Picture 1: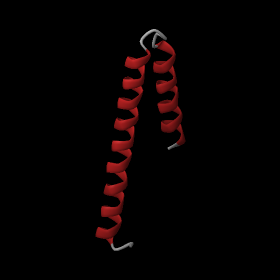
Picture 2: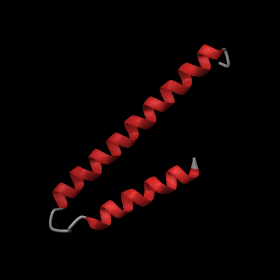
Picture 3: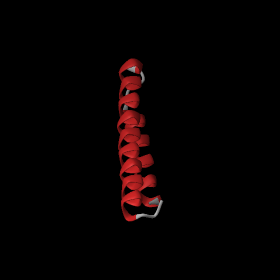
Picture 4: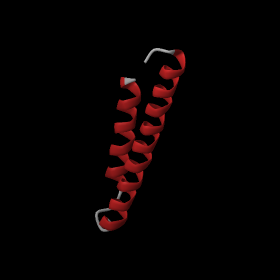
Amino acid sequence: MNSVSAQLILVLTSLLLSLPVVEAVAAGDAIALLLGVVLSITGICACLGIYARKRNGQM
């Protein structure tokens, strides 16, 4: 899982470095969108994990 996190950080950093400084508002919107997508996917995976544990009787 650490390699996935490291790759995600690398991709986000490269995206941030490639954005021009002049478009600060657009860059902020892009960062907010990326964070929203990442947090949504993390939340969905967490809910699926809880569901799977309850279904297997581990909780």
